[in-house]
Length: 325
Image 1 (cartoon, rainbow, N blue to C red):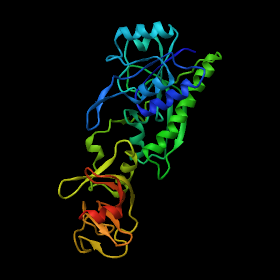
Image 2: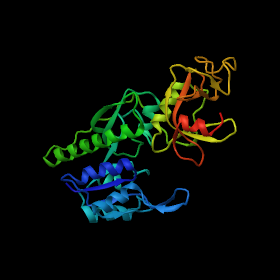
Image 3: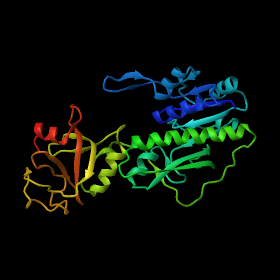
Image 4: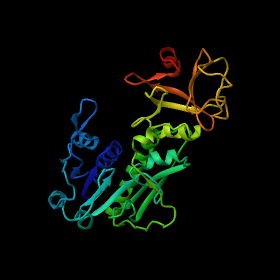
């Protein structure tokens, strides 16, 4: 079966690898144009572009994927019966592609829950017990098209975005290839409309989502740290206004631990009611090994690995040895 792949992210690149290893190797890959990235603002290709080049698949990076010329390019390369496989493309696919070809979308959620740009992150943030992948027919609506295949995946207590995404990539690739295999054998996909109930939207992650707001409970902040690791990263604001990246954290079972508390006494403040830590306080507990705690509205968040501004990632002990709290 002739396919054309549209994708951009690391997640999409993994699905592309699985598709290319099957009997449905894409005749063409479409991805977003190169953009300036990083501190040096150097022009950089998206992950799917790198993967397509490694696999030696024809690659195009149009500025406007919905330009009629792109539709003609797909037809000339893969034929009128081509199946468009879309995964984390990062831009809305519209006409004339939608009606000219059959567009299948690999979406990492159990639709209709978490339509939109950041379904894996939002599922972890919300404390969902499970997520999954849906293979759907792309329509003009936002991830609202009919679904032909789904697969579930548990979200484990210590899962991060990275660990969940890795499993979903494999699941999504296998589901997609299974749909195409059956189609090639004369069993076209049977699409079912999504239910009206249970629709939620996974908004794009913005700067505010990265901040660990101490007015929220520690358990919510712990999920946020896991949801944004390792690709985006959570951070907190110190009293001096500087930002500290938080790479790993857990809810402190004993906010005060054993030994003295650096920088604050038990009697100070009433925020962080469970352990007496003032809300928003960043304190060191104990001596060897030292613990780094962040006071929240409900309980304390223990920071296990952090990254100071302009510095390297380090554990709590190393941070406390070099930084005042």
